[in-house]
Image (tube, rainbow, N blue to C red; front, side, top):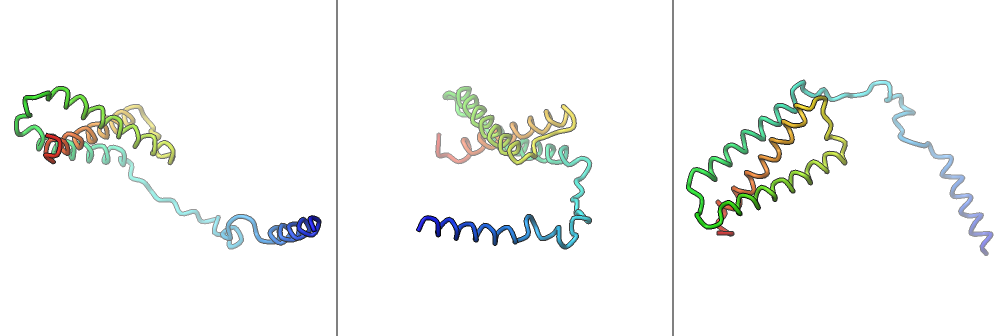
Length: 134
């Protein structure tokens, strides 16, 4: 009985070996014409400026009225830590997807700083404007 089972598995594997390996695009000569998406020369800078613009609007809405006098420094510190933690998770996900690489240190610092500022301002906006925490 066991030998028959192994013989059946062997026949199944032989049939699988007959099937073409990999993608069928190699058989159809699609490999010759690779489609590349052309990324803009200043894509990173545009995304960073967008994050900075949105975060400046959010910070304007947060700081246009005076902050509550009770423990506002502690609140700003905790919101900053939450924003940095969310940014760290985003950077880790971008690194896993192999999208977190930069050609210069300036681009890395500019993008990272703008994302961190965006998440800090988003956290502050949610905290102060939602009214759930005050």
